[in-house]
Length: 363
Image 1: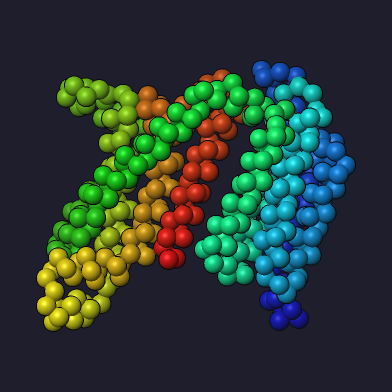
Image 2: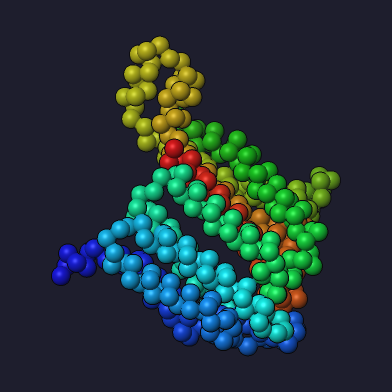
């Protein structure tokens, strides 16, 4: 009995149960007469047509049954099929329901459960980097084809996008600029700081105490603290400049810590052997220590990149632009879909950065 339970994919089974609860009790859509009024939840089988609803229910049941299968990769296939079926049902309901149609809690629950099932299935089947990348590209391509065909045009989220499509692209580019413009200087400053704590252990306490203190300051408060000194310097207390400075300060701690952990974890005998071969200290650092510490350094880079993508949303409060401008405009107008127009691309950027840096670390 115990051995049989151990063969069950408990993650896939739990995800299938959560998805089933979402189908049975959750609102797949929210329908309102106009943008100003609150929407009423509508369950899946009332929102979408019979073919789409049946496909979602059948795939949820298949995911539950697949948890008992011996083939470990079945969860990834069923999860991908469920994810696309949920998107298909969302587009189907958008063409059927009248009024302002927003995506409900059940939709997001089903989408999240399906995505996690894909990730779990890929991990259990020990899929390689190319297989993971190919699966992600295939799912995104199918979703993009649906969007290009106008399948989601009836959704309120799509209408918000079409209304602001002329500023959406520049906002995404500005967000990426904020991330790159803060992560690169953070690496240039944080890596030497981390290296200094390894070479000079007595520096460790003061450096990390200062960086930890910076992390405790709330982001909005730090933005506010930078206004006065930057204005006095003639740089300007609002806009990209204070945002970049604050994002760099927040990124220093994970970069420095990962550098210290990666370089400090190398066996001293390796460096001694390199010295015995006639290498200089600089050659040992670049040819021996950094390559050996690369997995830890990339893990730190992954953390700081994802963190910065999220913090860059808050930077819109001081006029830095980016995707946060949609988020705070939506909050001010009580427009949930406008909030999602900024939040979803930020989440996608974070997931994409995490995925690509994981692949790089694996290589």
